[in-house]
Amino acid sequence: MPSRGSRLEDGAGLFSADHSTLHKQDLSSKIKEQKIVVDELSNLKKNRKVYRQQQNSNIFFLADRTEMLSESKNILDELKKEYQEIENSEKTKIKK
Image (cartoon, rainbow, N blue to C red):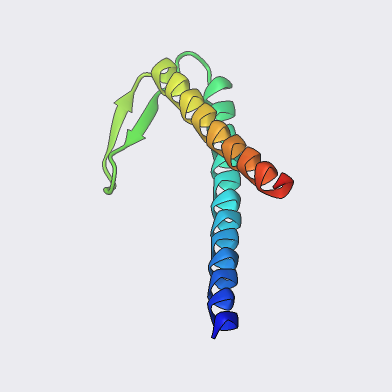
């Protein structure tokens, strides 16, 4: 019986590690996408128009380029911070 309990614990640990890895990969993908958005917005000419898509629809609204750029940079910073936190938590788990 005790071995059965330890197997469950091991399985839960594996699930947690797999979930963490998937989340980390997802974050990495989002970071790459956001870097491209920031780069594209940074390289636009001043007179170009930028549109923002309404969430969960196909409706677009005119947006300010500089506001979109700063918002995109903030999102990128938040994603990087979250990714770094996952990296740091994995390192502390390895040290234990």
